[in-house]
Image (cartoon, rainbow, N blue to C red; front, side, top):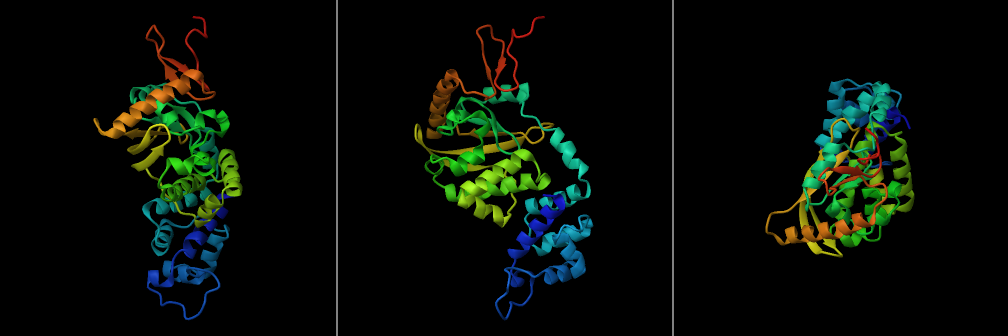
Length: 317
């Protein structure tokens, strides 16, 4: 898939979601062959020719001006994240070499500072994921937050895969139906910047085949980048809890994010995460292949363990 065709797919999907009356046009007298706006209606409202807009949707024109991009965002009623997504799609389509540069900058190795910070935020659940939501690192509560995930093979350990394919997910999240659209919309945002990313192609291909709900939401092409919020859990080991979270992108990693949950001191939720921390400590003590973390040896020196990590004493001075 090229970025030109990805741009067209996005425009067509968002066009189908807008009714004529949403943009000041009279409702259709009869039944339309396709939902939403017609191409010629979008073109007229955007101030471009029908031929030009048709070429945009077909991926034959990939470099619209900023004014055209902003006009399309207004007509298609894009939210701020979708507007930025449209800008990103046109930029990448016009400069395909940027995709290769961005892909080459990605790493699965988590920096030492991020691992130390994750450890120091205990007992709050904290984990670090790749741009495609592969679980790269977690502190004890962060790992225990997802029942059964520690037993998955390291390369299968993905938060989005867990959400759609694990039988435990719907019990863990009482508001699962409200949560999954935002999860898919986030993945759509990631896909737009590099739709040919091998990790992303494999993940999406698997989920489209194995989850009808994922496939349905994927076709809607909604885009959203959530950086904070609140989630309700009903955890089989600690019971119900409601946690706030912050999602922070780690600079110069190619898209790694740290997801940190937190509670108010003295609350019942605080007691629940303290119990999660104890449960997760037992899981990590038993060994979790491929998960990056820090352990504290008796001499006080932090030692990194897990994928891409080195342990003190491995190298001779």
